[in-house]
Picture: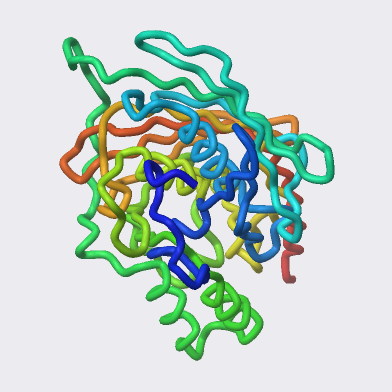
Length: 323
């Protein structure tokens, strides 16, 4: 893929400098035609991680645009689950090239079927005149919080944690995560098993390793990361998470993204901590709506996100009173 979006693979072809760059790297097989090299199937998922597809589609689109332009928005639909055992082919359509804006539509295919479609709009950067934004919430600083891996390891080491749940966490730790997370809420073991109902969550996020300076690469990385945990805000409103394996909470039967939109407001670095604020204003008819705001550490609102997805929950059985 073009050096404008990521570094080239190592000479032996094994990997890029970071996990995230290898996840985004594409092979150019013809003009405006690209093929994935790596796809990630999360544990328990029906198909390829949605952020993997969004990020690679943005890489493909960016490779067909002059470096004078920078992506300002994208709107996408997930049509079919991606198969991690088969490369995804990305076909880019050059819809429009203007003086200030240009547009690209990317169709992702496997076995001749479209599994994902995305339209991205790029703009020549303009002077920042009138502007406003939502203020960044007041949350604990990332330096005071444990990482996701540290929390899972502490629970594995806790003798009070059931063996089945401990084995589940061990498998989670073995996954090749390209990003680091730090939840802004310090929770007890009971809250992980029986989480309180809430329609919002916030966590610090950044990629593992150091990236180059090209803004386009950082935008593709955040496109990848923006699909993490966002839809999970919907079941959280009902007291359900993938971690809630026991207790009176509803059980998640299925979650899958239907669409995903992003707006890029200002430059940022994806290898520095950013605050991801997620909220879900509505769910119903087996669907849930979520919104996300991604802030730089200095409080600048850098990216906004919207997503709707299929969310199917199984109601918990009422507990019979003991006489």
